[in-house]
Length: 239
Length: 288
Image 1 (tube, helix red, strand yellow):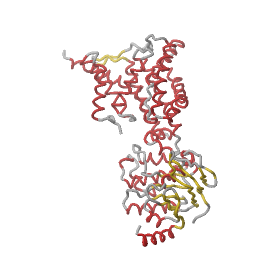
Image 2 (cartoon, rainbow over the protein chains, first blue to last red):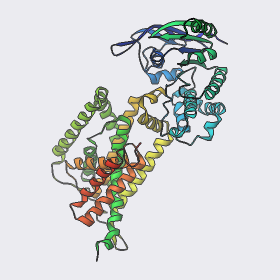
Image 3 (tube, helix red, strand yellow):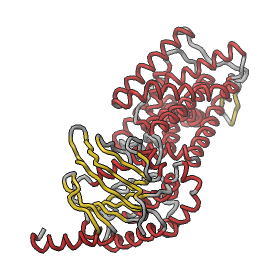
Image 4 (spheres, rainbow over the protein chains, first blue to last red):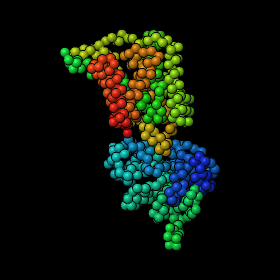
């Protein structure tokens, strides 16, 4: 299933003003993988995603997408390259309809041409969105909003989709459903990079994972191996 | 006869004049939505639009409505430049800095107008300036009808643009959540520029219709800014339907205030309405 490295992050430091948030973080995502970044609140997960999508810029190190450096690019240029970021808290445009939210996802030049096919696909993945397409985004339930957020991310026609805290505030049943959809999305050749606070759940779903603590990667590897490691830890330390 | 029997005339005139206020206020509202900056130069830019039309009439004998055609792109481009070289740089520092720059722009436009066109009061006088229709016992000047028709055309066109085009949707998205808009591939700087350009084209339109309806001098812009501000507050900043309703309320309360309270009520009543709305519903009638 996995092939070449599509996303390579090498030894990046990221600051918020004077405050250092990431320390020498490196990671790789291979084509067709589902990779998770797990860690506690405030560990730097969201910072890492924002740096990949160009909202933040690293002071040191580099980020490459498909072998090309994207480190200094603006967020709006990075979408164009093929990395789509589904932000924490869904961040839908509240006074736009579901359909308008999806369509604006296809704003970048490459996505516009594929808009019709991508919209059909999104409706296949989330049929409820087609029913609700003329409803304002702010009137949807949390789960439906998350579906729009993911759908909007897919409308950008990405090679890699990065999703921040997808399961936050959603019921376990909904979360399972969304993970099933993510596997389906991956099955269509889109690489997925996930950030979750729910470490346990994430490790069960992903192929590989990185565990981040206070701005540093402390563990990485096959998600299944990390699950066992976590089990050992829990057994001995009750953490 | 009681004052009530003569109510038809202030109601009709109030609504028609409200249309003019809508056109004036839309640009202010659009810029605030996208840039979160209150463009205090907006009123003066409207009057600049009136003056340029005045020159076009006096120099080339053009019909002011024909002057719309070149003045829209002219103001649009002027807007792009003002946003790029003045406002955007200040806005990157802080919203306060942008406000101060806009204030400086207002002073420059006012004083330049004074130098070029003298402080004398002017009007856009045409062959149809005095034309009126009589419906029942209500006299309706043609220019008031033009004002209202222009407001409708501007509203529909702007709405179509904002709802039906990628660029319009980008402006809408950026005014709701700028950072997330950037994650969609929208260049927020470009969107601000375009929005300001459109606001300037709206100012040019408003200036022509204002000049057809009322006389103006270089300092008239300040009053227009305050009116536009009142209209947007009534309706809710950033809401187009709100701006329309706000314009109607403002126009109506002005003419009805004048009808019942005399000339002193003309501006007193609309601004009392603004105060009442601010107290009860600070986000405006249609605000988010």
